[in-house]
Length: 133
Image (tube, rainbow, N blue to C red; front, top):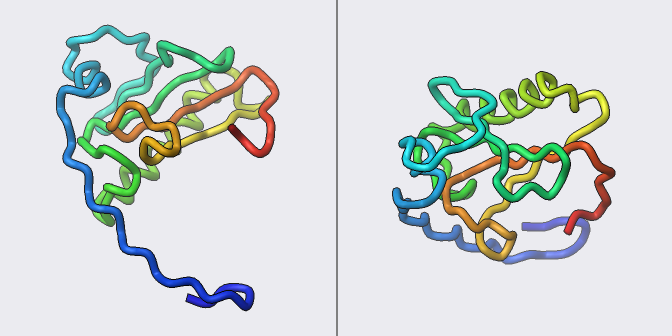
């Protein structure tokens, strides 16, 4: 791969992570753990983060078991788009869209992912800095 005059060796794809159905988000989806639900449809669930880092902090999770973003397949493309559309819809519904919000997907422990069920963080209600964390 050649980019801006530099040559990079292609990296091997990370192996798919085996999905652990005992994770906290899977348990929320099954109704075993309560959550402050903001939206639900046939493909996803949206709920307030139990440990918010912003005045408005909610999560959008797929009902389909995917551990990390990198474990999604081309067959998940419509689902991934749906998660982002729902994130925007819920931000609008909560009245935080016009002032701005941040959408974050952490992929893997090195990026800060602690629950290995794909999820989209939506943060609003405070100034966001760049670069993030």
